[in-house]
Each structure stands twice: as structure tokens, then as C-alpha cells.
Image 1 (cartoon, rainbow, N blue to C red):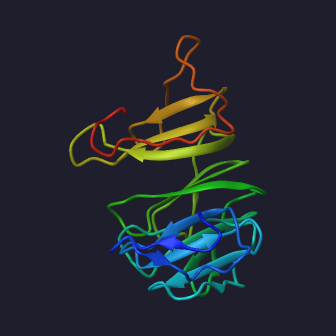
Image 2: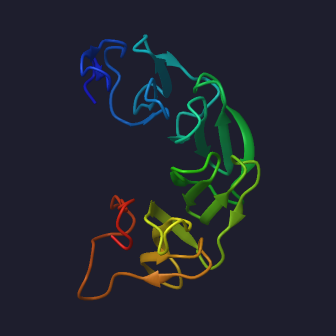
Length: 211
């Protein structure tokens, strides 16, 4: 992201809402793409709606990983340490809603694109899943650490998305689950490597199963 502006998804015009000397980090766009939540590398978490100037989000730790709900335009998520945060006012304020067990370092939040409040979080202590907007989480059995995660096309039409994870599941590797994390199939081997599981980005195809 440029230090001085972002781009509008509506007309590709420049958005001068970003402050000078604010750099790096990650962004999450609201479901309707009118709000940008920005976890910066230098100035904590900031939010802007309708290309207005970015303002600080003091209720979310600067170290938080962030994501947006894909159905509800007002809902954003954050995770830091063992705490899971939820905003219902477009990212302006966050409150702790659930716990990620003994996690000290959440890595990524992934949200089911078809269901509000269906959330996965990868952490240094495993993989966690919530179906109630983060009020409660279930630790996925057998996963001791998880890094990159992604949701892709389901094995059967109308089924739950396939879950992909770069994780430690009886060994470090890349895995896929077709039954919401109950069983896992390793998808890499000595002849099909994908690089370091702790640093790679992982994306799954929402249209074609297994890709």
C-alpha cells in the first residue's frame, strides 16, 4: 500500500485518507468494500469508511491480526494473544468476545464467505473454529500449530468448504480437510514441496475442489 493513498474499488480514484508516514501491515475490506481496516506496521490499527481520513482504533492491540466478515458489512474480527475481538460498528470499536485457548501468537483469521460468524484462526497453539461470531471456539483435534489457512470449494456441491492448512498435524506440512477439520490429508510430499510452511501464503480456489 502506498504511504499516501489507497484505491477506491468503485472508480479506482485515489483515496487521500491515509496519513503520511504510515506504512506496511495488512488490510481488511468490509463485505461491501466501503470500509478499510488497516493494521499498520508503524501506527497500530486504523479505519476509514467512504474514503474519509483514517482514524486510530484504540480498542484493538497494535499486534492484532485482522479480518472482515464476508456477509455482514459492519462486522470485523481481530485476534491478539489468546483473545478474539469483534467489532459490530464497522471497525470503529472492538471488544473481546472469545478465547483462543493458550495461544500467544495468532497468525491468520479466515472467514467462511457464505456464512456470517463462521471463523477459523490459526495460532502457535493450534487451529480454532467458531460458528457463533467468535463467542466460543473449538480447538481442532490433532493440530498442535497452524500458520497459513484457507477455505476452498467443497468436496460435494453444497457442502462445507474444504479447509487447507499449513500446520503441524502429526508432522509439519500442508493439509486438506473435507469434513470441517475432523480428518486431514497431507497434500505435500518429497516430490511436491511448497516451501516453508511457517512463511508461505496459502489460498484455495472457491470454484474448483482441491485446488
